[in-house]
Image (cartoon, each protein chain N blue to C red):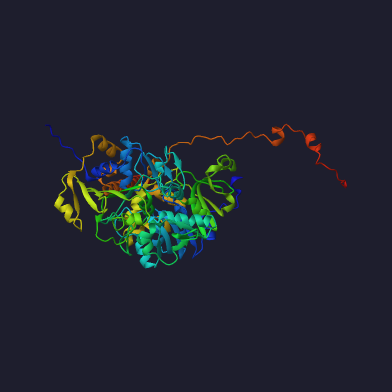
Length: 340
Length: 281
């Protein structure tokens, strides 16, 4: 049975079990397929003092900072379509959040070093001529002499090994093999650098599907700790092959984020007073009807299939050997075996 | 001579002017916002460009303007998809990008860019994203600045331009450098030796005196200051049918979307009310 996976659990259970106060949290998405079902649950469970790592964010960090879940942010860019103060900015002041300001490449490099289990990774010197370097906080960068060429300076960023990663992807099998396709951003390294990995997926598929498309697997099952099946789990962001970004909902949120009272009523309506993702979508259709969701649904546009075949000939068949040919080999010798 | 009047917006002029800064055959690292619209305009008007997006999408065309660096609207018919770090490592640091196409909120005399803080450290804007490295390693930087301004001293330098002018960028070991800045008022280029920015062409109906006053230093102006060429009718048609948000302004576009959502909610409420009344009677 497909549902017999020991890793399969509700989002509530997964967050309770694997995200602890004070953890370093890797939010793996870069815009596309934001793990919003998991983020909303983290907020509902009022997790505290998290350090969030995300290169480019839509409003994942805005939500977490505004709801008081964070003590530190390692990031590079956030989506700000509406001018003015955001929940993130108010959160920085109210909860005294430390913000480490990096670039997309350097966040990706820190996660890659973590994923490859290396201590640090070089960055490019373009940073040295900007305030990203001039105003950096202790421990963000180190400038050393290149040990192979002492005339050259090398800028380093430390590896990050987050405690837990949250990933939203298209599909997963019962072993946890997680498949993501489209622009990959920092998802793979963001997940593989982390000690624990929570995967939420649009759907669970039989093992055979994964094994007929192994190039799409970005996290092998043995690294995955929890599997949550959350259709529309990335709404209002998008999932290739499933649905588009709900730009109107993103706009609605952006407009709410600018004021404290609007933000708090948005969060009450869409997170605190909602039990889970199923009820979130139910509430959405209650308010706006099915029409907006129908418009977002992806049309069918399948990839060209590839041949994963080889000759499938075994050595015996290739060399046309028979068992007798092997037994007749001069290396063979005889020993006596007790038949009992 | 026959004179006809056409209607257009400064955003449309900006996109068309910026698209002219891309040459046939360029490999372009495209930033979000107006740069991607201008790059697509160039591509849709027939230039052969390889467009690359930071989130890991190579050689794409778009059926709709995207809003972030891994926007899935770019996936239909792209040549390759990969990870963010591959775009930087393999292609940008390898020197394969002819153009880095960036947005900016503030620019100084030498094309250094701020996209991080309106005021350090409390007034935050978007952040670097990929801009720092793109500005450092693409051969030609083309910058579009719609809402931003020129300032004497940036409150925060996010992206290196010509640094302190002259040879300073070369001495720092950074290749390439800023090539053009396009704003709502004009097109700016950089002097060959000093690397100081100057006004190359001015958009129609823009007052030169006002423009000069909006720049906090004595802005140099090209001896043969021209008017920025208007977008062709074909360009306008492409922009308006493909990215109506450009023509009517993105803020108004966003507002329209919110209105649409409100209307849906209202319709829904009315329908529920009718339904309840029907069954309570």
